[in-house]
Amino acid sequence: MALINRFSRLFRADLHAVLDRIEEPTLLLKQAVREMEEDVTEDEKNLKLIQFEQEQTPILETEVEESLKELQLEITLCLDSKNEKLARSVIKRKLELQQRAKRLKQKSEGLSSELASLTERLQTNRSRLVAMQQKLEILEEDQANQSNHSAVYDTDVIISEDDIEVALLREKQMRTGS
Image (cartoon, rainbow, N blue to C red; front, side, top):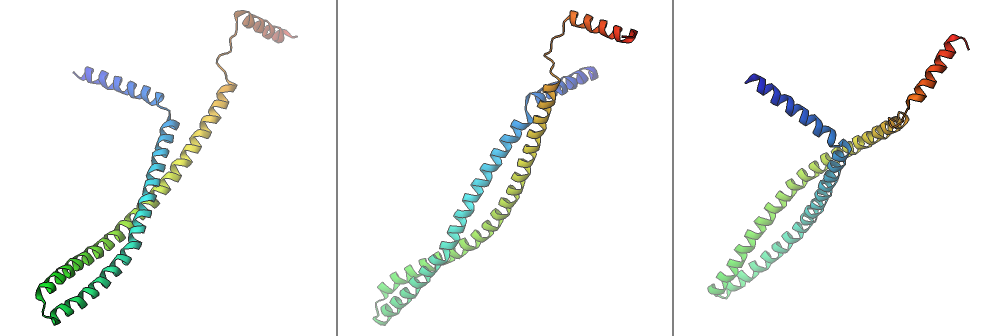
């Protein structure tokens, strides 16, 4: 049983080594850089959207406050004219606007915290992206240098037996005293 486990581990290790050689690190790194760039772009879009919403919230809050003031005047008018049915309708709208004001305030607080976390994540992702791009440049330079070195030591050179014999005769001639 232990022998079978050893063989299976050895086979898996060899298989992983083959897969590692097949997968080019530069291609994997390039793909990771592309994905990280997409994430950063998406985060930047979301950041702009949240900033826009955050800018619009105070405007909406101001509009709601103005509407509440107007409704308060209408309620006073209705009560002064002893029209309770109309006053109830206006009070209902006032309560709805007060709830809307609460939701806007909660939304504003939520946007602030979301904006802070997104900004932090964006900064982190940008620094990771820069690091990955630097690693990619280094890896590409290393591969370029290796390909230049391998071109010098080309293994496709064919040496015939006659070439070997001629070289051997020259070596012997040089040793015997040219």
